[in-house]
Image (cartoon, rainbow, N blue to C red; front, side):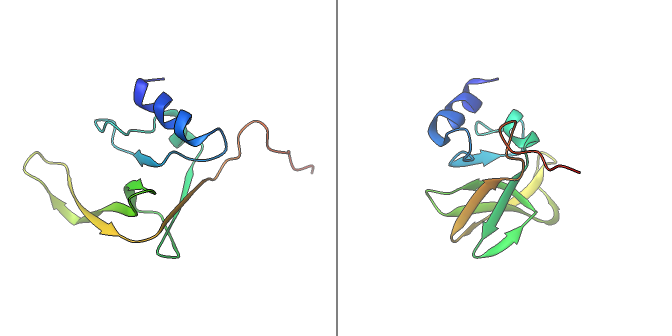
Length: 100
């Protein structure tokens, strides 16, 4: 686990996702192992699947601007402001197992 992932877990607790998280490995807020659990995002009351980065405390998300690329060949991101909610899709090892 890298330092930023450990800092994110310390701020959020085991059952809550971090305040800020990114899916880009080059970002300082990259989630790493947290992303394997799956993060659910509600933005402005609508569930979104195309979020590249979010910050709950500052109420914003970053999404791709279509197929547009920046000068380094990375997807161009747009920052949108609004209410952000996040949760883990997978509840982890402590979650009760469904019996079949």
